[in-house]
Image (cartoon, rainbow, N blue to C red):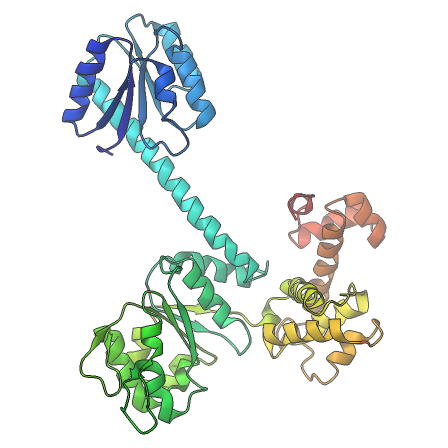
Length: 458
């Protein structure tokens, strides 16, 4: 950190001049102050340098300066020196939070080494803070990709790892499990978040229009092309292009897409030359892309170009703890949208939701929640009536045992009661008619901690 800013504070001008010259020769930026009060105006949590100050000064001395700096940011390194130092004063300075203590007259090399180490420490602190800010941006995806299950938290971690990069990501998951939501999250945590996010469903475009839709065309390029059309690749410039159901892309057009990704340029139909593009590509498919490759439906070279990294999005039936959370979220949104009441879920409704297999995944759950809010059927049996045509009664996977499903339901009941009573164990015991010892054992077996449900943390 040889370009760090040093705030040098000493009431003796000769000291300021000599020390600043020495530090400047070492490529440090030095700001000199004759008193502590003047220096404080430039010190805040964003200060990325080191404070070097004499202790004995008129007005505010070095110890008072140290305390004032620590009030602004306790992690700013402060190096103190004095011509009257002794061991007790050194101990007092270090206990007060000083980074180091140097006696006058000091060896310039020792001062330089001390400042170097202090600057490196401050640099690491500021870098960690920047990383935390990035993680806070990532945590914003919680409002879009809801869920506390281990399966969905793994997806969150992969988004945090891959999102800030330009790596091509291939999303694999069943229909309705939220592939586009994950793609948008990857875009929003990337440096391209201020650019466009363009989504295209490759399985919904007629083959005759596919090339024009992706690459665009010039006026008169073919019959009916009365004006220039900008394709999806151009529209996504500076941002992200999401190719959904990419394995449904016509085989004869896959080689053209491959060339675009390799050359990073396109040519409109009827165009006179290539146009450079700056995009990130995220792809998705609802089937194993390797099977599509082995079956001759998808080019392997295109698959490996698109699949620098792969994220598997779990189906809803493997996200048992998230089902009630998602249902209530969608029900509340539907109640607000349609200005209707969202009736609370009773035990029978919870059992039905948890026992259902959700073949349509999150999309089906969202539709069910909206119908639940709009329905005029009696609350008791309403969920069962909405789902009565389903033939998939499993929530934990088709091979889930009765014990698995019972345990999942028990965990959900405990979680809801703990949430409802904000971690009040006595209230939960009373509601569920459980002795404290039994409740403690069940919470321990399901990995539930009271502190996670306290007011202000739920």
